[in-house]
Amino acid sequence: MIGRTTLSALTFALALPLAAMVAPPAAIAAPAAPVAEAVSYGSHALQEIDFYRPADESAARSPLIVFVHGGAWAGGDKSDSTGAAKIRHYTEAGYALASVNYRLLPEAEIERQAEDVAAAVAQLVADSKKLGIDPHQIVLMGHSAGAHLSALIATDPRYLAAHDLRPSDIAGAILLDGPAYDVPLQIRDAGPFLGIAYQLAFGSGYARQDALSPAMHADGENARRFFMLHVERADAKAQAHALGDALTEAGTDARVSGFPGRGMEGHNLLNAMLGRSDSPATVPVDEWLAETFTSAG
Image (cartoon, rainbow, N blue to C red; front, side, top):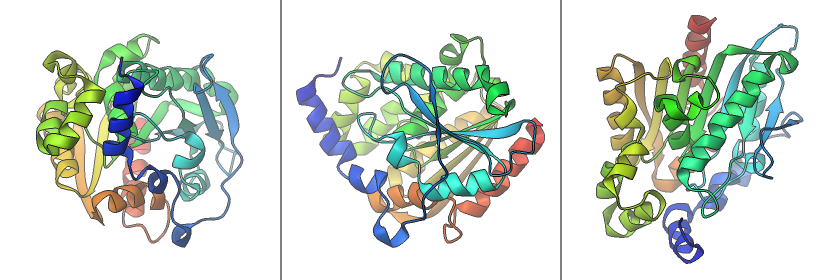
């Protein structure tokens, strides 16, 4: 397991802008989001979900978006990473939204984090009648490390199989500027310093790196649709296309789109502004969601 001394290097390398990622700048601050209901999916304090019902609860069963926060697998939290605009926008559109916490490095390795996300999805499915959601219309949405974890459970069947679910039970996955869909490629493209940081998270063994690479599982059963978004970061673009190409080659519906924004500022703002009318990603995501939920209905 990764130690606390090496974790500090990982956090510095991969999560230095964490404060910007989990707290939008004052210039894009939004009104308070709807009130969440707490849903537990385990005994650990971080095995918790914030669940938001749609603004109009007249539908018997609502589609569900499951959001998985970023933070370099070592930080972030559902309470400040989801974004008030995102919560308000999607609940007003008639969707339920669940924001998931999961255990973090160094306490929990990435495999355990993926297990947590899968367990959270399974809990929501089990509670679907009580929560008023349609268990056949679930879309994963993840940012940064959360995009990687979402992609992993949407392509590697072992995580959902532990709960008698399959990747094809997931209607789709929206991946916001994620890393490490192809871990060996990520390590090579990251350069010496960041490459070491990624190795601290994913290990130096190729077998484990491949096992934690969603692109390496794309030739099997996957979630039914994928939408990979990236900003103007070379490694994020390469990772999105690596996964998109692997999924397309396997016959899975996969779309890759680039959006304005440079470096980590663009990376953070893509997530923080999604759901706002002035975000260039809001309308394309809305259209993709409508298509996905219509086809899954």
